[in-house]
Amino acid sequence: MSVRIRLKRMGTKRRPYYRIVIMDSRAPRDGRTIEELGYYHPIEPHDRQVSVKEDRVREWLERGARPTPTVKRLLNKSSIASRVV
Image (cartoon, rainbow, N blue to C red; front, side):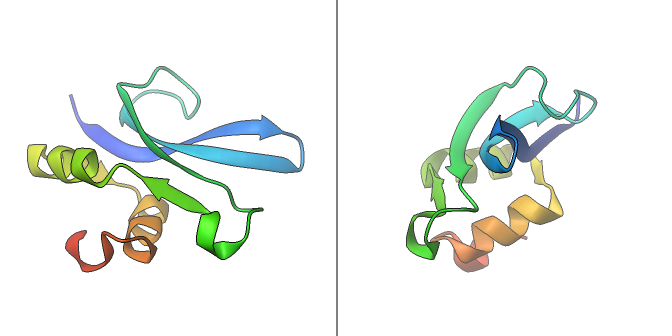
């Protein structure tokens, strides 16, 4: 099973927010998750847009989970800056 760190869309029309989650790569975007690692609110001010459980992200990366390009960009913006490959 290939595991990805990706976004799960929540919210209403024109007011989206996303959860950063661990999912099987074959699961649908809003399908069943393994674990929730944080959130991304694109409408909020920049200092409150991204919140991540850093220790859990590092642990999943060590286990071999691969982030999607969007999640990789968000993690690099947050405090895990240069650690995501």
